Length: 120
Image (cartoon, rainbow, N blue to C red):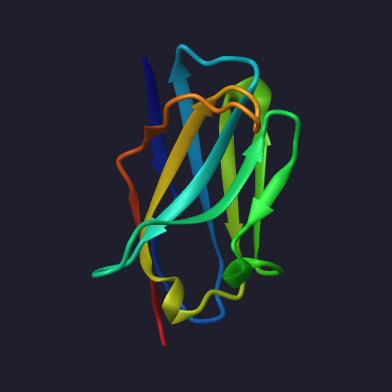
């Protein structure tokens, strides 16, 4: 089993910044992918960014140039630095862990979610 604990959400004005953190514990494989998804009211959950244990990253087009995902493998922790926030970034942000490489990812584990609210 894998447990994910997120932190760092909150309320910020448009143009501001927030940093999310997600610490994984339990049966963590050395090769894995961790990422952030978000879900706004009435919308489907969508990928924001993902990073592999090797450092490869992918981003949603809507956040490219504004958000940066990073990780500390020694701490099994992933971060999401969010700059130039917009009201449309308002959502519950969920951390995800998946064991394995990008070509063969295992089952997804999810955190409890953290609310990010951007006021205009």
